[in-house]
Length: 358
Image (cartoon, rainbow, N blue to C red; front, side):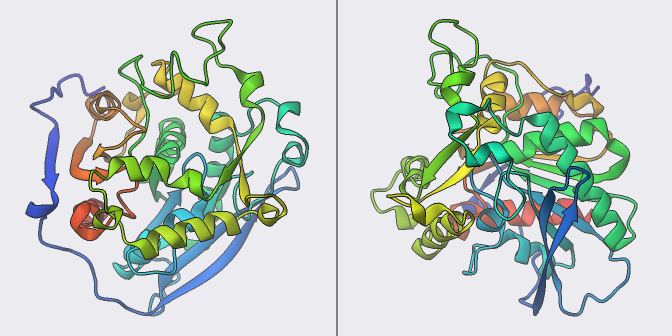
């Protein structure tokens, strides 16, 4: 445990877009994408998209990076939008990494639990942390088989960072480097929207998740994707913080991730509720894994305008992990990898590329 790390001892990079470090990004080489599936013993399967440079023909690449989505929006919508500034996967692949985008069960092109075809009220929250860790384990094993590498680097956004942290803490020997972005962990039992007093709490049993009210899965409309993003950008003109083309592609891809989205009015896509159940517990400071068990280098990133994670989540995780760096991206939102370059994306991307290369 990094007990000797105090706040002054953390590698705290207070990064503002106006003082971005020199870019370590590559030019724009031709990229190749291949969609794969990982078969599970349950007769379900996981969707994984591989993104690599066209000239990356090595049997064993220098690096493989797994990207994991958050609570609602699956992998392709999160990390591989077909517009400039919308594909973190493309940026990492251009720098020479072999990139793998994973959809957990219940998301995107992966198998959905049968309960997601029934009313949400008929099941408890689906895809909790243990389920996510099982899927990550299967995906990492597949990536190691495809690449011949002994270890894989991991990057998770929001709940994706929580899930990857849980996996990495349990299987540190499998992980080369870990990046968590705007992730809940613990350090405070106060949260403005996810913990005590929130809609996730059982009104009859304070401090307890309202599992029945949450249900097994949730519907998400296009408009529901933009509320928190809008409120995180202080300007009336939201295009100052994000490219409208990126925002539109994000909504399009999220709806396209569920073949049933157009059967409802307004169109909406399904997502398992397990991530929200996990978020409630984390918001109450009920940690589900120990950062002290992260034996690999860890980069903890938090946007100054994030609505999901709290400052305490980032500082506590970075203090407890033995080899942690902490990056605060000033002026960026929860969607830092989709924000404009001048609104934090450049700082974020350059830090990630440098960390993965070191």
